[in-house]
Image: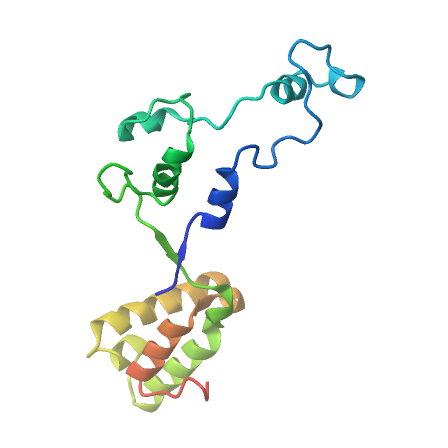
Length: 178
C-alpha cells in the first residue's frame, strides 16, 4: 500500500530529552525581576523562569493509567513512545491505527491511464471501462474511482503507481507504454 504516516520517532526521542530545545534564553531566576527583553512577554518570562522537567500533558492520558501533570521520568520514555505510536503502553493494544500514505513521488497522472482504458474498451466494442473489467470487480471499482477522480479534478487527479499497474494489468495494457 504505502508507507506508514505518523510521528517521527526521531522527533519523539528529541522531545523526550530534558530541555528539548525549549529554552531560547539563558535561565531567569524565579525570584528575579524579568529582564527588559522579557517584560513585554510575561508568559515567556514565566516559562523560562521555571526549571520544571518533562511532564505528562493531556486528559486522555487517564485512559492509559497516567495522571496528567505528573512528571515524565526517563523510565516513562518507552510508555511515551508507545502512546505516540498509538499503542496503549500497558497492554500493547492499538489505540489509533497507523495511517498508510503513498509517497507523492509514487503517484501517476490519472488522465492518460483513463484514456487508455477507455480506448481499450472502445477497441473491444464495449460501452465503458466497467465492461472491460467486468471479470474483476475490485479493478472495476478502482476504475470507477479513477473516472470520478478525473471528472472531479481533471489533469490534477493522480493515483498510486501500484493501483495504476494493477488496473493496466487487469485491462491487458502495458503501463510503461501509457
